[in-house]
Image 1 (spheres, rainbow, N blue to C red):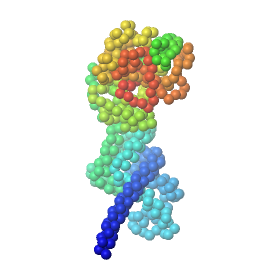
Image 2: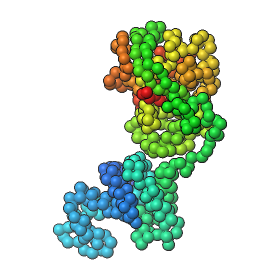
Image 3: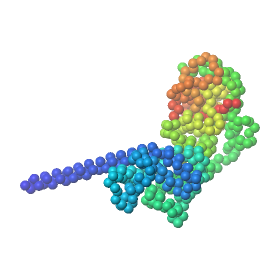
Image 4: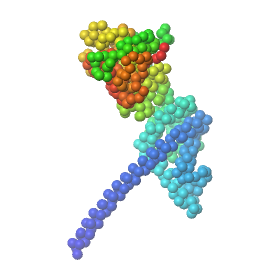
Length: 470
């Protein structure tokens, strides 16, 4: 009998542990499911919520977030619970807040209502999830703020919230209640909430954050992209390439460079130098879309501006080096924002050749290449400040080496023996890179050399320069 009792106790302890373990795994599964459901819900209604919030802020509403949450809740309930009027949830709210009994015919409805409310509350309480949802929505938020020209109005709202968190006597009547509902005044959530507000303010007014990190004398380079008011050219920092024809391609190079064909081009402008980190910084400071934290993920491979420590902080000492870790999409968007465009492949090669039909645009070829370009043999394994080497005969710097350069065209074989202003294939998978880089052998710096890459690709030896129609 004693033996049986011992076995029974052992089995009971064993099964209790088993049930606890099972309960743990089930709870983990439910928590994970809740997180996924809330993320899906947040993404589904993100666009309308952002638009409402900005609209209320512009109107000068004291509590734009309260109004937005009210509208958002109504939209969610309308779609998920099938309600048509906000008063339909009144009985459920009274039951949750004051314990007022719910009529029998509304009990099932209120159960669903309570489930949605609890889903939001428990999910927002998870700081990492709350932060992830916000960061996912931030690019759309910044875009909508710029679209509705609401930077000033949103800044006022941010300051009101920060002041309220600092001093409860500076809060509005319902402001403190709202913050309590969102954060429950838990230290970790409050810290995340405050950081989000401060970072949003910085991204709305980046010009206040940019330090004068580069001396004027350093900016007065041969590239001519600074002090534009003193430039007499119609396109500061650019060189005009006169219309004409040239022989594009090479018989001795890779198969993709064949055959040599005669190409005719109209006049066009092209940057004297590759776009630098400083130039890129000036644009992203005014244009949030291109920033490291907000540039849409579908336009890059996950390593966009990898060497920048933050949206407005390039790698220390790299201000006048070519911007790298930029995708073709980022390069194109930058040029378009600056009122320019990416050069076509034919334009790039014409500018690089400078009427020289040999492998490089310089007389003397590879023997004196080190005077004109940074490449594997002389770069010391790193990229260099732009315009430190001699320019080619067209007064263009680093057209050979330092960084590969994105051009507009899709990669494909040369199909036409003679053409005028060619744009390459109409469709494709890969975009063209030209010029070679600091990490490549001299062979890769030839004027006709072509390389292909996915337009989302970002590399530590790929940058770009812009062009423009005359």
